[in-house]
Amino acid sequence: MCVCGVLANSITSHYYMVVTIVLLPVREKFETGVYKTITEFVADMRLLLENCYRFNGPDHSVSRKAQRIETLLEQKLALLSRFAQPLR
Image 1 (cartoon, rainbow, N blue to C red):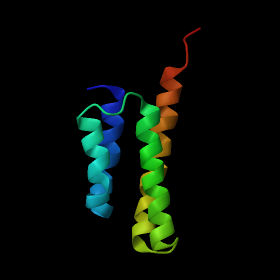
Image 2: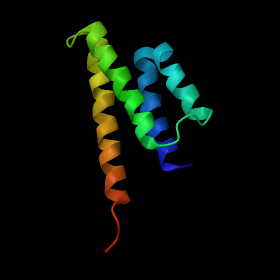
Image 3: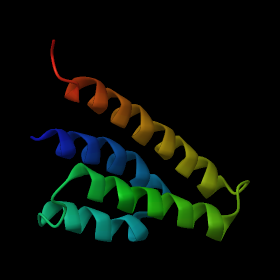
Image 4: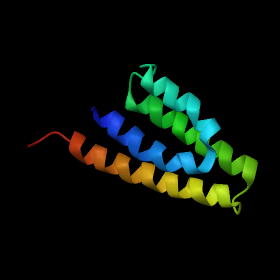
């Protein structure tokens, strides 16, 4: 499985507990190869999270779960960027 797939699976498995129906388009786009880069996937995830915060407010339980997902996303991206650095 590609790095993008590992990242997507890690994040999506947690997010299903939060708002399954909202995440389905992201999963479908991933599974059908619509995302050509990790940047496209991350942009959709960030938009999804931002919309969650705006719709539910910062103190809602769904927003708190989304914050955990956002933290996980950022941690995975940090790991990914560490591995993407050229070797010297």
